[in-house]
Figure (tube, rainbow over the protein chains, first blue to last red):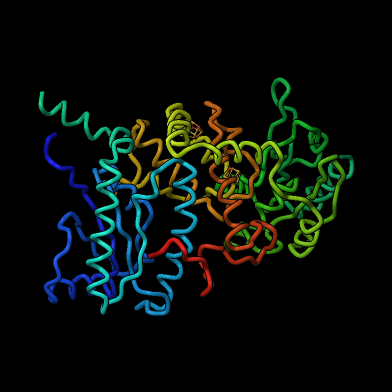
Length: 151
Length: 267
Ligand code: SF4
Ligand code: SF4
């Protein structure tokens, strides 16, 4: 383990704002951390909380969830509904002892290519400091599976 | 109690209802749910301090609906469950006859949902001091301690789903847990499967749980899983100012929003 730890990051973003924003980051040729894998959803309202847990269970060290700013939702209210659910979800996770520093919520519009780059960079930096999410990986038996496969 | 027996007898005799759900003598010290269909047997109905089960769990059960119109002996937990079921369009006013009962066994006449709402408004439904203590204890832990504490609790779970069966609000004909395309929750009761099950259960009951404690009572492993949903009651109160299960036409807090909802955690 002499290599520097690189966190695996999964970003759950909405199609209309943040995905387009991330696209703009690319077309504007702004560089940002390559750790992030983007998953595109129709709307933040569609981002089921279980999906985030599945990301952790599959080895993510950090998660970004992002969509349209309030009042900008393509479907008018998806992000407002999502915001309420994130609120209770976050406190549920905290109550269960899940490391909520590893989940970053944000609003990034289609025009905010620079904000997206900055969001990813600062988040990845934070996740890197937190290190591998071993507590969760242990529960998900991610490390053990490897041992078995290696025989 | 005699009032309730008399009322139940009347209802069955004049065929207003076909079954009365109430408490009867169980084995040992416990009371159990009984389903009285014969007016002559209404004297089997009892009420004492062992009659704690939230009978509302039977209202939507296929086997019970099949019997015909029901009357139900209703403690405050049952009444609040009925309010939730009504607000979720599972029950209409007049679908069932409610035989309200106070904690000391007095009959209360509750002819319609409005009467239930008014009666509930007079009750104190906040969580008990013991529950508050427990919540405080967990809240005071560090993140790592909380994680270890819950992992230890979850490790006892063997996925019997008695908690789900006992809950009046867990009425979906097909639970996400039983869905295998995709498989949301692993079938096996290993650590990950147990944690995901409990997280999902609690989230699906957030803003719907009325704190009757049936889930924890049903758990053969004594996992205090009701704490998870209690916590959500606290959250709903603090964030959205709602007390769940008090009105038949309440709007579910998570299917609505306010422009000014807090967003200090969003970057
Ligand atoms: S306390 Fe348990 S059984 Fe009762 S409503 Fe809440 S989750 Fe359901
Ligand atoms: S009743 Fe207890 S053991 Fe059974 S599934 Fe629920 S928490 Fe697990």
